[in-house]
Length: 196
Image (cartoon, rainbow, N blue to C red; front, side, top):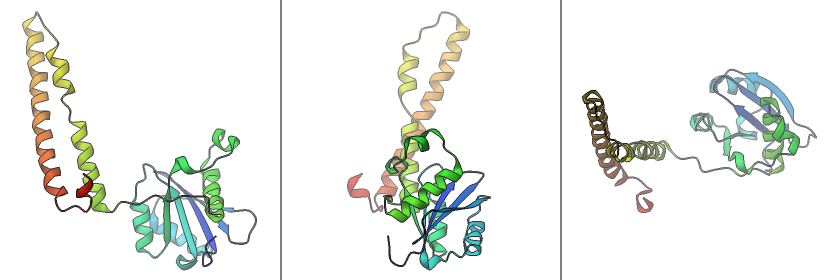
């Protein structure tokens, strides 16, 4: 337990809702605050109404599809916030079977207070941009071309359709080359370039 932290706040963040629980230092059981709309500014207001201050609180949420916008916003507002790997959270068998937003938020608050969570490295926006570009490159693949080259047709209409598919693959290859060129260019000035 960190000495200056008095509130360990678990957030179960989804596209439509955010469930909030707080485990106060020195208190036996975490308490569920409630579920709010997924607006970071509303979260900050809710926390302050519940006597949580940025200076003495640690917020945690699971890495997932909500991304890193939340952690970046909260940190800019002065809140300490960590993102934790879902695979590293110890769950009891009953917690694995019955998952609810409330239970997940309470679990995160409790485990954070106990010091049982491992936070992940939050990539900066530039790291994420390069990752997105690399993923786009992987999505453009020569697999379609290989597959289409094995198909034979007897009817002219089928041959026309085949040629259109081949053209689509050629255009995808051209996209791949443009994305690859962009990756090469942007990676030159990227801090992670030595390991790329």
